[in-house]
Image (cartoon, rainbow, N blue to C red; front, side, top):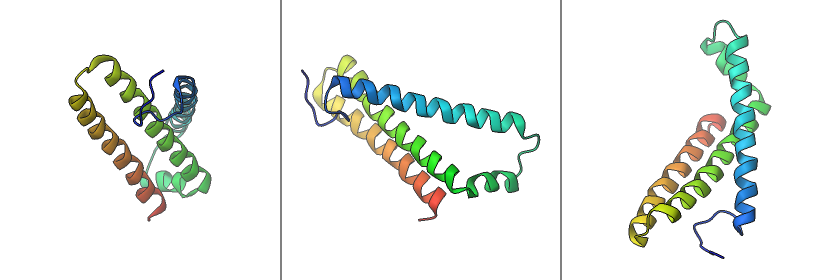
Length: 115
């Protein structure tokens, strides 16, 4: 069994479940947003800011951003472990992706909650 600090879960089975759960969360959010755009004839700033003024939308968006963070973290670790054999290069690429994922999550936090 591969044990590495780079993996998000405790084991391969845990990573598998986290990937599937995060994919479901992301898919449901995408379907909701698609439904919103289809059902709203004119998306203006007022409509958009009104949607995100609701606490449930902010919480849902942060949940999705967390799911993207988890999904991306595990996914990039798995891809790099399979295809990049040089440990130093793999660590550098993973660092770049991890910093990017954390930056996206923090940007969402600051934008949504005005922290």
